[in-house]
Image (cartoon, rainbow, N blue to C red; front, side, top):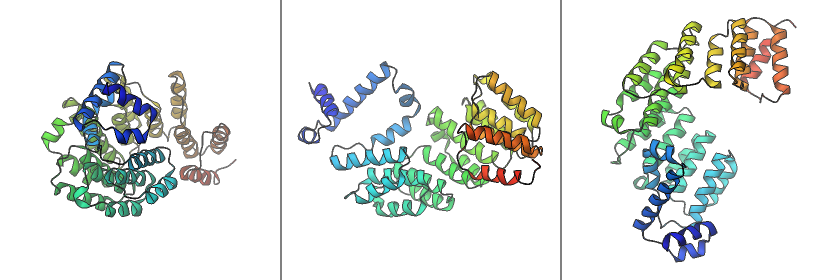
Length: 363
């Protein structure tokens, strides 16, 4: 039957035969639906399909039986280059592919966003015909602007999307919140959060509601605004949106500038009440809030070990910072030497800064 033939064609990956036989578009959707139902019955893709309907709907708009095999393959390869961070190789392949369509350009924009290439993202954007840009195009370009800390350009793209006549969901709003948050403009991030229409927020999936709150809470947390970060957390939970690890991390991060170690500990202790077990990022945030109390930092490391949580390289960086702040040069040097020997560290500006600070401390 047709499903069997389609399955075999996919396994064989035979472009010639695929071009000779193409089921009608309606049948393709039916097959995709049946395949999805099969995977869900097996416990595969169920969470993604249920929790990310907006993204699935946007991706579905790109599916076309009219795309050439060359463009389909090029798009897949470009996504793989982005995933494996082979940015230059991916860019070279994109530039060498003739007749790039919207789907391939979207993948190129994603590559530029991951690589933080603003100029190249702009060149791809200008290459895309305005009347063919879709919601994914706008969202990915906004993400590229966010990564490159170009919030004004992100806003220009969002304004263009708003006037394009395209129907869009909460995802572009989340991208704009992130764009201003990453650029250190929390008030503008909060402004875009409040701009989300109530019906759009109501229709959004739970994960995308969580992302909206996470993005704006993180923007406020970066500038040490615990009061407003907590206010958003209270609003989120009162609206029935369950918090996850990132929301608690934002709450604790907002305590760092004010050295609110006790408040951070209280936030940390709340996590089990929401069914969450602190992960390494949460433990590291708690450690950072106690960085002026070296004995407490050492105690936190012991508690992590008892909880069977493996410290990350960032955890060790925070602990090293606590040693430096306590003017414990020998302890900091021993820690850095030990974790470097274990291969935890990669070259980083923060490690270099700590090393320079250590030079002024006694051996």
